[in-house]
Image 1 (cartoon, rainbow, N blue to C red):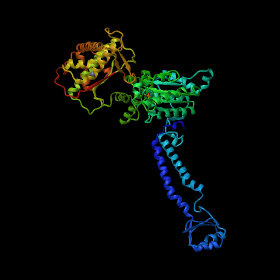
Image 2: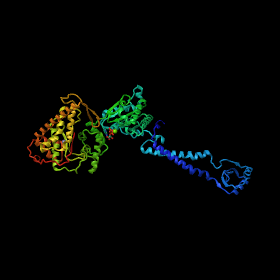
Image 3: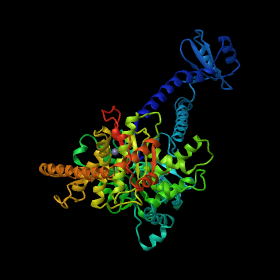
Image 4: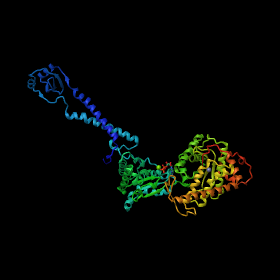
Length: 635
Ligand code: ADP
Ligand code: MG
Ligand code: ZN
């Protein structure tokens, strides 16, 4: 078999050793037992009697001591011989035939019993064992027992089990449209063959984690009603060089047999990484061989057979260019984070599986959950259901969903972690500082909710800021006002307590990142104009920036970054200074209620500014206890 080149030898060797030992035992114990069983020991006189009665047919004089003989019926006897010199001639007279190996069974029979029979038995045992093993792993158990090393163990989803349809994947209309063509090809390949069109061999689903790539691939199979072979890229990565390649071969052989069908390679970046000379010295042989095999298989594939290869990744930029050229994964299907309508639809899809109150406002939930993926939203619905059970309710209400967003985004509420009064006051002012700076700058998004209940993820306070609708383009002014908003928390601390805390570390990081990106990525700084000095990699996994410029320029970038942040910091400080009484009023409300919603916030903000004398201005501004570590501003 072609895929037996480099089998995983360890279990094979053990098995062979066991079989050999067992067969030696059989030969030593069982075979003599079979052979000697029939030989009866009889007295010499009886032998003479039988000889006289012409009952003896064959005989063998084994040595000076034994004679083995056989009667008419084929029974074997053995007797101790007396030293009778005439015996041989007497036997001859009675017509006894002298045989050579009387005691031995037929050599063919002996061979069968001692060697072939045990082999057959062990083969059957092995077969049964590997069958049951394959079943446990989830394979189809189709291959022979010892021939299955190096098989692809791709999970096969037969059409009946793949009941996922496009309607189960909400949002992602664009991706679904692109995949629709593949579905129609799988349903009716002949139509395409007739006109002479090649269907794309492969399509690559690209997008951040949890956006439904795996789900979409299954839906394609479900829509087309064809088998679905699914294997993760990591399953090709093997200890032994050549194993991965043989798995690839086997996967494609299986697929071709089951055409039309879909082969889905999840997380293809694990095997599809760019091949580069330098890194292969250390032993990336296995991965490269696997990749080469994949490339070869995709080329050698008869497109008209109706096998379509789907792959998913969230790191398209690391893939080998050879994988992406026409004839391989030439279709790239973006699967992006859902927009507002998409989020609403996804929530509705998952809400169907849960008992819900009739008056759920999915729009509000989706608005609050900006930036979440489909997987997050599925999780939000499930968390809401769990919360409903905890609360002893029979169905999910709006509040469950609202609360579970915060659970998914910010971790569970941690009521046990108690802030000191002083800390709580600082956090309240800090959070209100952010919110006010955001609200007074017309371009900033309104605040949805602020809480100062510590969360398990370490955030002490937490501002939920939601864009009305999703924004893809930010103007320079919006970028700047966001930076100002980030500094707002620190500004409030300075203004009220005349001292600063460690609570702003995350704000500082964000503000710096924004300011830097304005210069190096978006060309928003006059001094640098439209020169991009940084490139983004890992776009879907948070985005790593790498800077490419002279050290001199790097210094100037740093200076400009500091300048931008400082300007915005000053601006934010001014805003809060001008509305100090509002700051007191709002912080007091938050401090007392621990939570303030967007509406409450705007209501207080829009009241006439009363001159309020609040406690905080005269509050003790001494050193803060440690523990005010970090806080998050969710955007
Ligand atoms: P990935 O893109 O990482 O492969 P999955 O397809 O595995 O993401 O999605 C994980 C889960 O999230 C799915 O099983 C599904 O419950 C949910 N999900 C993700 N995207 C969607 C969507 N567009 N519509 C409905 N459910 C979704
Ligand atoms: Mg996936
Ligand atoms: Zn902050």
